Length: 114
Picture 1 (tube, rainbow, N blue to C red):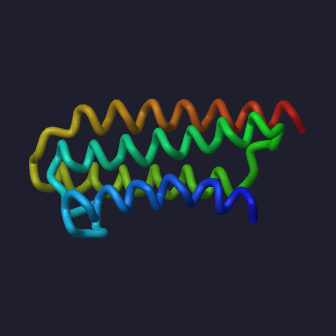
Picture 2: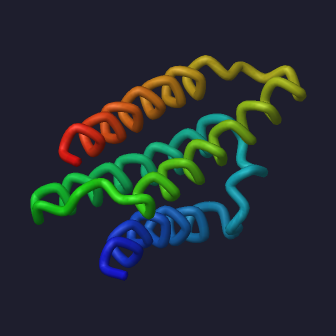
């Protein structure tokens, strides 16, 4: 339960930012730079929560991987929408590649600890 609460904090913070700046809770409808700001806030908060859990000597759990998967899925959905609309998607692709590499590192480090 502690991990869910810690990982939910960045989601809540990014949604509060989204509501305060754009009066919506739907990040998919945002234009490119605004979505990238939301996504970077979400990612930085999530990985900060992962590092906080690592400092408490907690291992990477399924909950952490589920949160990472849902964040990655949000990026993929926005990527598909950008491709369909013919918008530039370069920064989003770079962020998604970096996110997948970091997630793989966390998965491999948790597998090595077990």
